[in-house]
Image 1 (cartoon, rainbow, N blue to C red):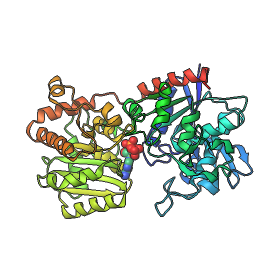
Image 2: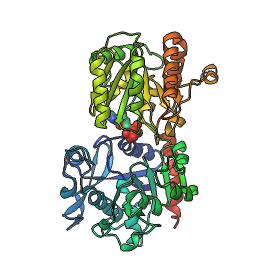
Image 3: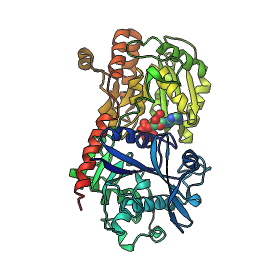
Image 4: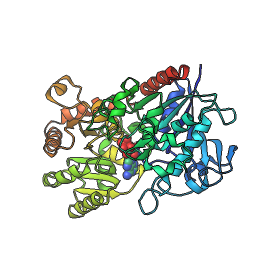
Length: 486
Ligand code: ADP
């Protein structure tokens, strides 16, 4: 029997994206359809979302929702079945969904995502015409209060609730006085509810009231119940261990396919790796680097933040640049890291290229054109860029943490001999370990091209599609849809 899922996500590819959450929310519906799960995605009505939706019917109106009139619209865009919260006073703002033009969080983010969660709970609890999802999946803190609204406003209908953590570092913590404006009862300010060190936590709400908690890789699922990676919530998560699981993300294998990628200069495959060199030359040209087919070209795409560990790459870059190693980097984030990469690129224009900003097309070109792809994260729930790299024959050099552990097989002597290696790993946060991993990669690239090609092919032949994850999610959804646990 078809199971109906309401997926509540604050971003969804291709309509609005800041990171991996959008990729997951955008790709899962099609994969779940194969498992007989019909997904309706509930997303905020940012300008980009509403314009993609076009003229769409209103299925519910609020006279006032957190300070203004609002409506829920139903429609379709990019093959997604969508419910959209059209609330201009909260979401009619261009650009990044969470940050204002000054680069800081919008000051009313609690109300914005409180309203979003409130409306999601109304849909989830069957209060909106003709919609009774069997399960509601809450993605990250922005959807977190949905479970509190379901809990404190019980209706005859209670769907199964799954909280999915894409990154435990972002928790949605706000002052306690907002409970009233958020229309939550005083009793919600309790240790076994939303209270978190004198404030309220949206993510804690999701975790406390969910029937199941999932995160995006098995290793991260076990890491988050430890003090080191549990971001202050490890006790709560450890206490719910039987209900916590890790389901490894996939990638959109049609969008990220070197054999059929319209964004790259030349398509290629395991059977015909030759044209990858054309992408390398094009990338070198784009960044104004020396067009040397033999130079070892590293790529990097992502948020320039402490989490992603790009400061480690910065620290090691001078010594590798001295050896002729090149870097093509795309990212944005911490202004200090941005400035430092721009400076090193200016100092070594033929070796280091850096573009600050967000550019989906260039991300594809770096994945295709680089020889190796660096992901030095201090923690990493799953990570998608190393999966794209694997698919593109661009060998990942990654920290041994979170989803990076689950997706890359280190080219140690044994794995090399057995022909199963797909990349290089090193202890997270360690400069000497990262130096050694870069060294190992450099040595194999420059001295043993046959092994390098073997590692490339191993990575390219892996299955990174969503089908395994979709099967696991479908089984989990069915388990709680039939019998929601208290
Ligand atoms: P996170 O969600 O923690 O940022 P992930 O690796 O899970 O990291 O997902 C990041 C996604 O965002 C990938 O699809 C990556 O290609 C994309 N991305 C990140 N930064 C940029 C950027 N500056 N330009 C284009 N794409 C980017």
